[in-house]
Amino acid sequence: MALFRVTQEFPLVGDPPTQATTDRVRQRLDDAAPGTGAAVDVGIGRMQVEMTFEAESEERAVRMAKMTSDRALGSGPARVDVQRAT
Picture 1 (cartoon, rainbow, N blue to C red):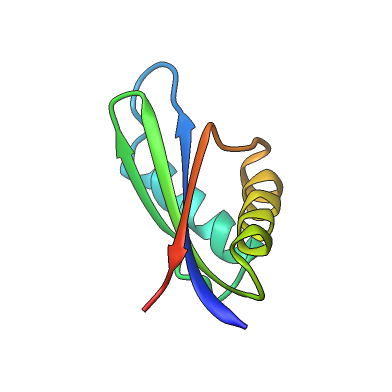
Picture 2: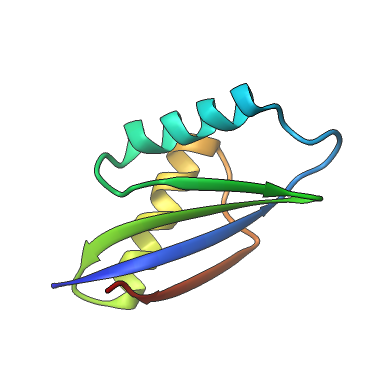
């Protein structure tokens, strides 16, 4: 088993979310996958979510991240990046 940092990017349409909305998103991610250190960064037209998963492979970590975002956000990412966490 190894630790992997998975970054998912989601498109945003319309007005940027408020800080309260961003905090709720982070809380939903934490509730869906406790202990993954969910971090949410919002930019123009996109939201980036970073989480750390313990998994046997990069592919498994990505599957876990996608399942979490689907459960917490109701959608999958437009882009995913994974790297071994240090």
